[in-house]
Structure formats: C-alpha cells, structure tokens
Length: 453
Image (cartoon, rainbow, N blue to C red; front, side, top):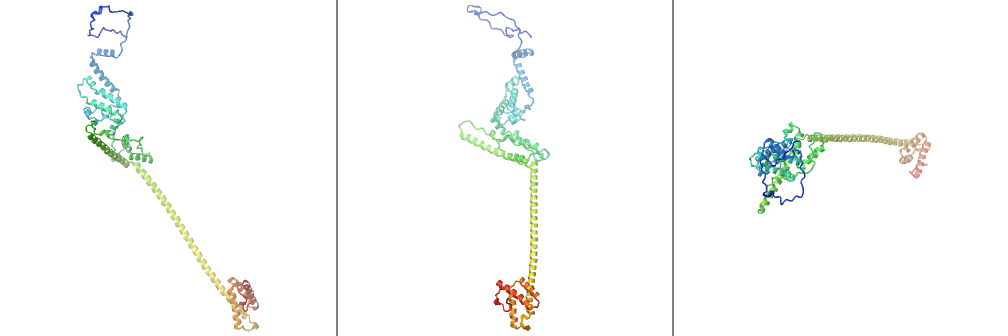
C-alpha cells in the first residue's frame, strides 16, 4: 500500500489570493476547538484516480484519453459479441439517406439480416447499442472522424424505433420480402429432398398466420389425415398481412381534406390489391407443393387400390350371387322339368290306367252280356229265349252296368266267373247286385224286368 501526498492544487494551477481583511479576526467567533491532526495512510482508488494515473502514465490529454477509451469500449463490445448479431456493413446502407427510411432494411441496418422476424427484443437492443457505439456522431468526433454526416446514425435510430414498436414492426414484417423463402422448382425437387426444400418455405409463410400452431409439412411417415390437415390449413390460410407499411403518406394538415381522403382511399385500394395478389401467390405455392408431394400420389394409389379391391370384391360377390342365382334357376328348371316329366309320366300312367280301366269295363260288360248269353237269357224250359226275353235281360244288364262303378263291376264279374254257366247261380249273382243297388237307392225295383231280387 502506498502513501498518497495531496498537493495544494493541481500542477500549474495557482490558488486565489486571500481577502484583504483575512487577517482581521474581530468578526470571527470561535464556538469550539479543532481536534488534533492525525496522520493516516490512504489507498489510491476510484475511476477518477485511475483515469488520472492512466493519463500520467501514457502522457495523454483529457480529450485523447476519452477518444481512446471510447474506441476500446466499442472494441470491447464487439469482442463480447459472440458473432450472433455481427455481419459486415453494406457500403450502400452506410451511404443511405435517412429521409428514405421506408426503403431501408431495418434488420440489415442493425445487422440482424439472418434473424429478421425471429429476432428477439434483447437482440434488437444489443444490436442497436453496438451500432450506436460505432456510429454515434460524438463517438466519431472523439475518434477523430471529421465527417459530420449523421444520416446513417439516423437510419439506425429509425430502425430501432420501428423494430422495438410491436405495431410498427408487424407492419414492416408484413412487407419484408427478404424474409421470404423462394419455393423450389420442380427440377430442384426432382434432384433434392422434397421436405428439406419445401419446409423452409412454409415456415417462412407461417409467420403471417392468425391461427397458431401451424401444422408442419411432416415427412414420409406422416399419416394421410396429417397430410390432409396440412393442405386444408394452407388452402384456407388466415393471414394477418395488411401491407399498410407501403401506404403513401397522408398529409397531416387540414387544408385539403379531399386530397387526404383521396390518399386514404388510394391506400385502401392498394392494400386490397396486394392482399389479393398475395393470396393468389400463396395458393400457387400450395398447388405446386401438392403437385410435387409424393405422399399424395401414394395415398391416391392406396385409395385406388382399395377401391379396386372393393370393386373386385363387389364384382366377385356379384358374380357369386349370379352363379348362385344361376344354379338356383337351373335347379328350379331341373326340378320343374323333373316334375313335368313325372306329371307327364303320371298322366301317361293315368291315361294308361284309365285306358286299362276303360278296357276292363268294356271287357267286364262283355263278360256280363256273355254271362246271360251263356245261360240263354234265363229262358225257361231249355228252349231258345224269345226276342223279348233277350231284350228284357240285356236291358236289366245295361241298367245294372250303368249304376255300378268299375270296382263293383269287377266284383260282379268275379261272382259271375265263379257261377260259370250255371243259370241259377248267375241269376242269383245279378239278383244280389240288384238288391244292393235298390237298397242304396241307385235303381228302383220297378225298373227291372227280369233280374229282380
């Protein structure tokens, strides 16, 4: 620790002379006594001492030391910057006229070109501070730069003002074409990666969306519903872009209100036109992306395959149903044919049986006629029967055969066959039959002439 000797005044500086009446103590009244002096050691400390020591060491004047310190401070700020907001300054921007502030790139002015709408408020403040340290007129003067043009410094201040105001920054971001990503061409997509080329385009456009979060482009493993939701979102994109940053300045005076209204109307029309053009531009971007998206083709092929599969299944089911119907129809036709054949055979058999029955009836009737003929028509005395006898007997036989059915006729024939040519038994067989018929009420006894019971 050193000892500081305090001089009576700075070197080369004379003290003011004492008042003429300083020696006169008549007006002075002591109210107390000073304590005795004490020698103390003090440590040189503080920015002013260090500045004094630095000037003494390097033999600098106040202005020289201040200029060098400003340069070192600016360099320290640059050295402290890790490079995240550092970029070379464009000579054209350095020569920009501050009056043309609407045409300047505010992010580029502050060295934030690679961040743009993604730049945070802290990054903007830090970039502004860095630019001010470098381009402030006072700092330039201190650095010995005699250029009195502070136009670029005004550009820096304007950029900082706009980017730190949320409303003004949103208006500028709305027309910041430098932040847009150019869509890849069809040829580029054929050579490169579809997702890598198109993803930055939609990430850039997503900054204008009123709806958040914005669906991502996805990848090869995205589901059909995710891809559908992505394109539905962009085809129905709700943008906040307003384009009022490009408005023509409206005069503030109240002298020409008609001109003011004209400018406002002109600005409104220009905004609508730009909005329409931007919507058409974005739709074309989405159309191009959709046309190049292999997932859409894959989904369509899968859908077509599914439709074809369902179509084939439907056709197979229809074919099977037709075959079933055809088999059923053929079976019905076969059964119908068989039934018709059976019916035909049955009819034939019935006809045959009917013919046989008819023939049997004819035969049995002949048997009946022959039976009375064989017994000489029941003539008495063994002589020939008279014509009247024959007619009466045959009349009775005809009456009997007409009243009995074939089965009864066959039964009667059986009895007659048993009776043979025995006239008495033959007559008894007839009389039994007539008795039955009379009893059943089929004939009257008075109708019989010979073969009465």
